Image 1 (cartoon, rainbow, N blue to C red):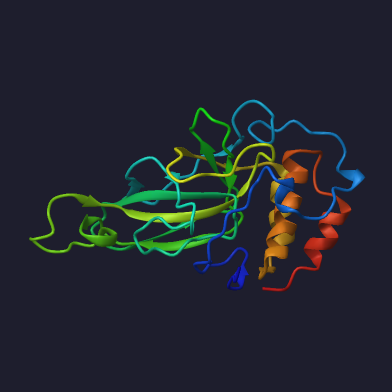
Image 2 (cartoon, rainbow, N blue to C red; image 1 turned 90 degrees about the vertical axis):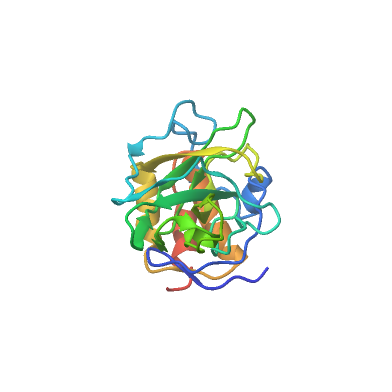
Length: 241
């Protein structure tokens, strides 16, 4: 599968979509080294009970959810409205419908460590955004992509739908599927997550192997005791952004 070069902590270009089976050996990466240790309990991560801890995600003035987030297309990770997928994750692909009531385009940021929570009764993954996404939301109107299409377009509101491609937070659960309900969670303040994000600053994700490095490191946080020396070595060897 071909991917563009993805840069961490900067504006992220739309990427080719793929589906990573979160429950299948974490995407097939390297072995977990022993210094990962036993599981450190973190609510909402792995099989730990509770809700993830963090700060509320706040939309800019005039922007709000236009409905509940839901699983993107299984085939290509798209949301069907022509907006390019945002983010480098492959296991939790979620469509986020937005409404812009400001009357003018608004550029907003989806922060790294943003959590998306499965709202399904079945065992689907929670997801985490590991990229900083800046995207411009047009004024909500009638017609494709939220743009006013004129008097003959009808009266149905057309929200602007952002496809977010996120990483898995629960190794033993299923990846997202098309239409599965999600809800917006917090921006994680977990210290190990923040360390991982710092290590990824200045790195580019250019291949499937690079994605696996990130997912494996995240699993060592969510399923075990935290980042390992092997994680740090592999991240240090990622290409520069």
